[in-house]
Length: 341
Image (tube, rainbow, N blue to C red):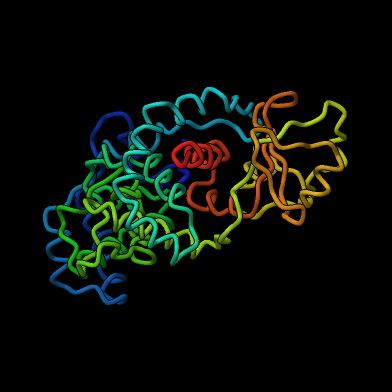
């Protein structure tokens, strides 16, 4: 679960050496760490933890290169088709491995679902999308990466709190060797940012530890807890595939409210209508699944008119809270359905 880092060319302290593979002066980086140290101490991180974490720490130019190389594009650039993404991310191998993980964890998953209301298959699908069921979780040192990104400055308001959260994890006994992951600070099977770990990580196997790096039970329980806190509604499907009549008046169903978060993602959705209202407009479920007449849903046509569309419930928005991408959320839902069948 990563930050949405764009390739914007905002200037930071690495600008003078961009492309050279050399970080700016160690003294400036050390001065910045001294500021972070004061803020971390004020939040209760022990001095000994900071001494150990910051000893010999240097910026990682590779992290900056990766961050600045993230695919960008203007707000008005064309959105690609969903189908190629679906074929790649809801493929036979991922479904097969998902069913294996599902079967291996049924006892724990059933207990988590009963407690949280989050479907077993949804938790498994998140696990599959984030790290391909634990096959790759990243090998960047989180403290170094987050310190580098915070120091570089373009997203300091995002990365510095995550750096301090990672320091709190150390302070609470998480071994430094566990604090590895993506260059942008996501770690473990669920790819949680440090602040998310502190907020939602749970012990799922009852051993008294919260280990999202090697315990599938802990990772799945933590994903379930994340969804609960994000507002998952038990018993409500994420959505259904539908066929849309050619004559549908899309202006009539257009959403006219601006979303405060991820507006480009949300602007592709229609306004909310009940399932009964969608049926009256000729929008019909395909594949045998449906929603209750009173269920509220929005319409999304990811590949445009005449292709498979989806009616999406509020639980789809919870998946978007995990990663605000329609392609990601649709693929999680579709993978979950395939794993469970």
